Image 1 (tube, one colour):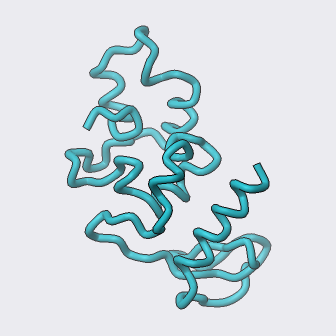
Image 2 (tube, rainbow, N blue to C red):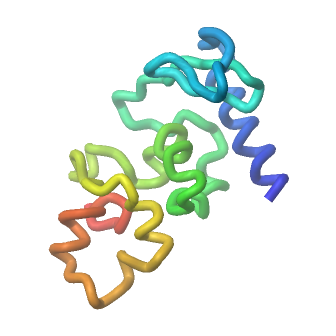
Length: 128
């Protein structure tokens, strides 16, 4: 787990290198910025073409559905994690807790219909 944390921290540091906006205040930063492991706030990059920001996304695919890394992977590896609007998923995760639901088996449980999965977590369930 420590090794993964180092990889993720490195991923954040490399992608934010030139966008520092100040110190984190109790773990919080201004809107449109993120508090990194170094205690600094960095502006969130805009990624209108949905390209992966980090170079090592292909090696981190297992973290795409991990609730702990869901937001980070969505920001840094949207293409690899299939979270691009160009894939027919505009606003496809209506539920903020999709990552948790996925890890609990929502997408693979036959109790839920495909329509329910599309309605709530289409992108996370890979239905786009």
